[in-house]
Amino acid sequence: DLVHYGDALSLETLLVRPWIDSRQFSFILPAWYLITLFVASILHFGLRRLLKKLHLLNEYVLLAITFLISAIAIYFAQKGYNTGLCLQLAKVGYVLPYLQAGLMFRNFEKLLYKHKALSLILLMGAIYLIEQLSPEPLYAGPIWASFIGNPACLILANLCSVLITMVVCELLAPAFARSRIVNAVGENSFSIMMHHPLIMFLINLALFGLSMVIDMNFNTARLKADICYTYPWRDDRIFLAYTAICIAVPVLVKVWTDNLTLRLYRRAKAREQS
Image (cartoon, rainbow, N blue to C red):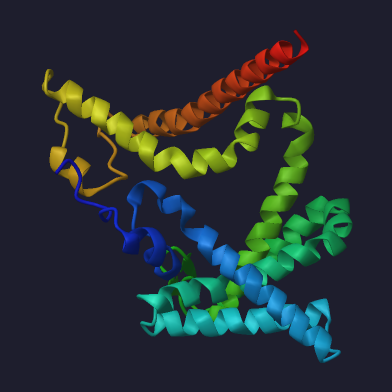
């Protein structure tokens, strides 16, 4: 076999495994969150409907409930309940407060962006304080439901990190808003994220073919075992090359397919009018 990762195509891997761990196919591993987000959205809607029926619906109450569910999910994942169906449950519970916080963000958007410098200082200070309060270093690996540190501290630090990213993006927007390259990357971020493992594999496959002609110290065993293998060429600049290609290829393919679709549409319209 050319590669030793990922599972074979079957009814189980196509219809059952996505609902359990979402990592049966290595080339679409970045899609792990789609089922998780779908289930979390349904659960979030159900919680909202329940609170409404109980006449307790309040965005802050819902945020507190989702926060508690996420902390419990992280706690049990840390205790070893992060395999099989428990893995999906842990991921669903983990993302709930971020889903609710995202819906509430519009209420604080103007205030956050009005005082950007102060917001950044307060958020970074909050993260520093949270890290000091946590007995362990904070780490979140939601794809494997792997978490380190106090669950509450972990959630709060992640929420602050997201807000910092939003403020930084707002600061940089005036400088890059008119850049065609930045806009192209931004408009195709989903495609870039979804296809970069396949593109890395194709790069390595091309290097593997070249290594059969030229002696270039290519590690074939790593290629077969690790989808994220990067050819150790000279120094760390090779990572920049991989990154640039993984970004450029989806963008160029999207531009080409959009142009092709537009041409076909115009031809169809011209035929209808003639």
